[in-house]
Image (cartoon, rainbow, N blue to C red; front, side, top):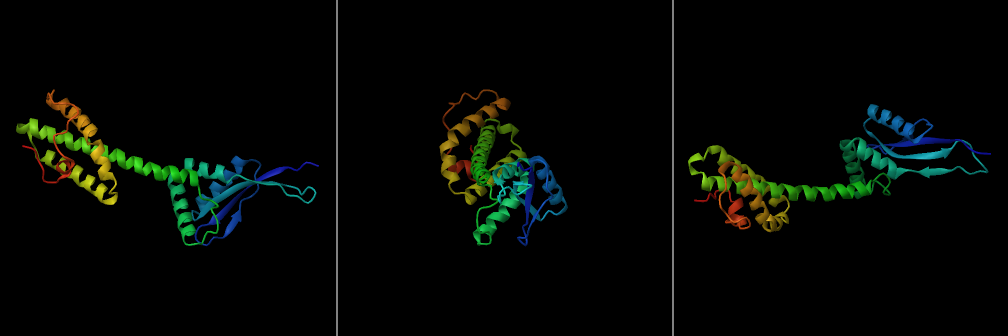
Amino acid sequence: MSAAIIYLADLEDVRTGERSTTTPAASEDEALRNAEDVIRQKPNLRLLRIHQQASAVIAGEVKVTVNAEIVGQRQYDADFLLWTEQQTELLRRRAVGELPNDEGLDWLNLAEEIESVGVSQKREVRSRLMRICQHLLKWCYQPLRRTPSWRSTLYVQRRELLDLFEDSPSLRPFAERVLRSAYVNGRQAAEQETGPLGLRDDVCPWSLDQVVSIDFLPD
């Protein structure tokens, strides 16, 4: 005798830990849609897993297959904000011992997101260094066109960069390493307005301390 397979979605209330199951579905996609419908009505619920279950008992055995990894990826792809909120809650509960195991934690995407934060911060450091170098060059080589907006741009870029260094001190050595390439990009950006400056591509005339100093302006 062969058994028909049904798909069930297991839900958990993130506040109380109470668990529930959606109505049986004929496919994994239908079970996921059922879960999403319930969660839209009750945002405090989160999807734990979708599993298969035999609709009949065969020789006393019920077949169950867990697809938690698939569900986690679908949540991540479908609603990133909701995924972050749910994963944050799970991590906090795991840290204080309220969650007895790793069920529901999407470790692969969590690792990728943590890594992406560092990549994003490094990209921001490069961008702000480039903007500062661009405006310092304009300040040097276009003295008659100096405006308060240039000062404002330098202040904002430097302030944001210093805040980054305060939050993540390891970014300062990174800024030292990439200053030369950021200067090259800043020089090229400045020359879009000034025309060729006749400067060596790879030599930044200022130290990092000068570049990020709120009060520094070249003569």
